Amino acid sequence: LESLVRPDAAERVLTEWIRAGYRFSEYEIDLVGFDGATLWLLGSMIGVTHDGHLVALWSTWRNITRRKEAVQALEHQARHDPLTGLPNRKWLAERLGAALEVTRTTGESLALMMMDLDHFKEINDALGHFAGDQLLKLIGPRLAPPLAARGGELARPGGARSAVRIPGRPAPRDALAAATVWFALLPAVFMVSTTGT
Image (cartoon, rainbow, N blue to C red; front, side, top):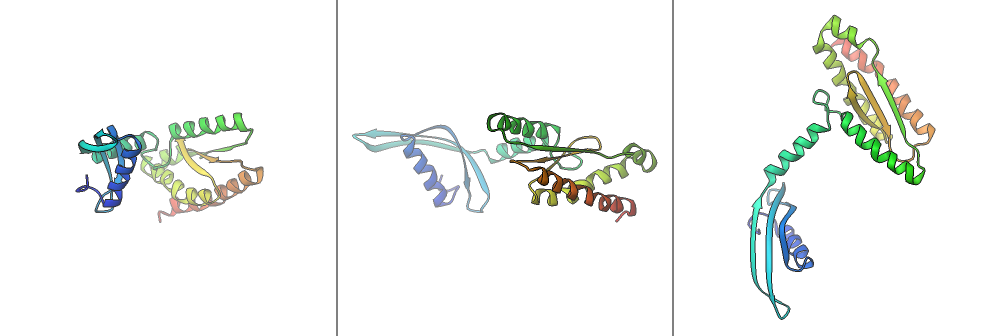
């Protein structure tokens, strides 16, 4: 273990192992390696004690970083649109489901705004699907940062539709401010798409 991770990371494992009663079985942990990168390990550490003292130790560790990264990549792909990189319909449904549960128990409010680009089919028909795709790809980089600064989250449920969710307890003025930013930036998106810059 100490050959894979920095001493402070190894100390973290040992501390958790002692708290668990000198017994880990199929234990997954993320640590920082010597190169500063996150390292995922799967291991077992079984300690043998006698009169309250540790007298023997059996331990095996396996590097599962690639497997974890592959799983995380698949999870990301399942919740993000491959064209724009924005969160997709599944992500939005999960976030809204969780938010609705909060509203049921706390009485808090939430805001959701939907936008559908008019005449998007005409853009595809006149300029081709590549042009339509480029237009959709412009929306996220231009709208997501200012919306995020105001607490909004941008998603692409599908097609030419976009959605903004305001988390927490949005007052009507918060939703209005997000909508104002959203629609104020739209002309810039279309101008870029039509000029080709």
